[in-house]
Length: 134
Image (cartoon, rainbow, N blue to C red; front, side, top):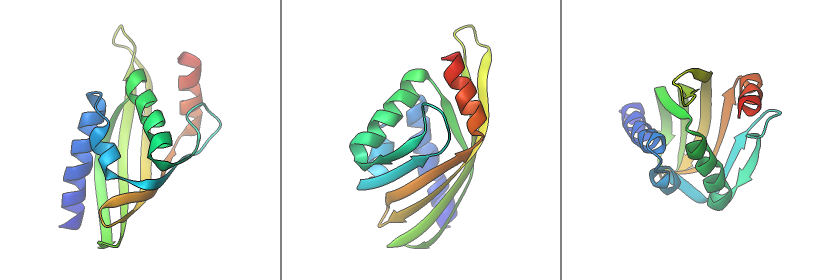
């Protein structure tokens, strides 16, 4: 039941991100959230607090990346919930050609329904190639 509910919430927030609205995602983030995107590319870093995460998300939306959750697993108690999201993302050129495709896993921890920390695992070489295209 918890995984089903988490999938509904994550699907909702990512659909809004795809449409350019990051507010639902930011609502889920705790004020002191920590977000990590590893690798050697312009997306990489560890971002602390909603303001830093918001800047990262605004870039994601501005570039036009389309991010989809394929599977969501959640477990734990409301004061300490682990969530794992496996999904895919892509970006199309203005001509409609797919210029970026990747798969990812996000591992996160929520406290009372707010994301305290999450990290993305994906093929970071593809993220670096996206930098070259951009």
